[in-house]
Image 1 (cartoon, rainbow, N blue to C red):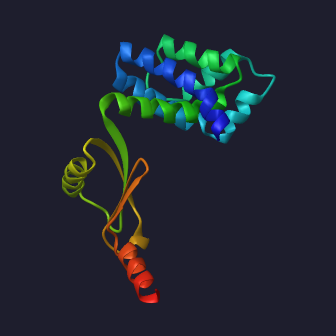
Image 2: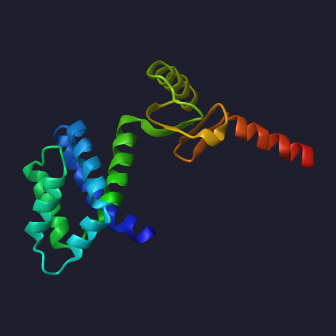
Length: 177
């Protein structure tokens, strides 16, 4: 939704600037957890309840994350709660991750495989993909049995599909054309 992205952008940029002055990795972990908590329907309903104070919202959200909530993070959450913007947490998290990746020259990569990959196979595949895409990749691996064999990799808006399913679809198109 474009509106949420537009409203969330200044919050994400401000949060990223604060993270750069400290431990970016710790902030990244905290923002990731806040994204998960903020995307939960019960948390959003609680935050929209007019009988709940901003401090109660901050306390509830802070109690749901495992990462340490710094005073800066508490202030950030309080600002969101006071302005009725807790529902922006998932979008803020997405934009924060994009800013972090851009600063590091990295990108998130979704690797779908027909079968589970070992740590060694994943590491080798990531090394090869980093050479192909020309940047550091932050991989997340998922098993997708419908691929039949091979892998499908999504990096940003680029897709590399070497799965058996994709090859069968290409053959079908060639034979029916």
